[in-house]
Length: 174
Image (cartoon, rainbow, N blue to C red; front, side):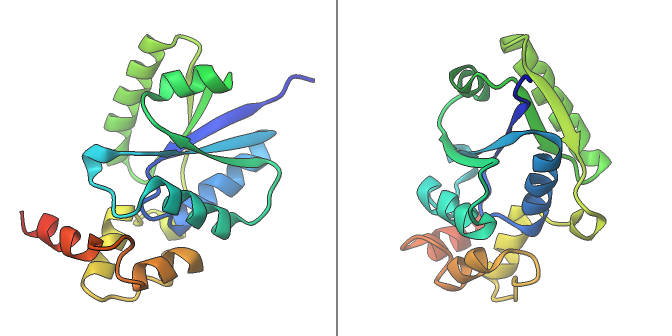
């Protein structure tokens, strides 16, 4: 039987319950899922790739169907290296579709074997985004009902990396 593998790429900065929902449901569809944690320097991440990967590991536990790897560079190059040509993307609302559709077409142009599968999160999580979670945390709001415990703990520890809270505040002002 052919292995049915997929890649779920994202910044996961921080991981939230919507991400975990999509990951867990993906393992019911695919024999294994690679959660690819993107460096996303353009987004100015709050947490390093290593910290984001650890939050995912701590949140997902030991599941042999899930592999968590760093993603540096283009997704199509990563897919070729892993020999996995199915990409999972989450769609929360119709507004996500235009960007995701554009990305899927570009990825397919760069790597014709690449197919994108869209999953919607459970309705309870459709409003969640890492950006909103960070903003709530930045202003001292309680994020425990939006993120898994390991992410909530990291956010409480001063928003991740040393100096990150101040950097986040400065980005909010600009």
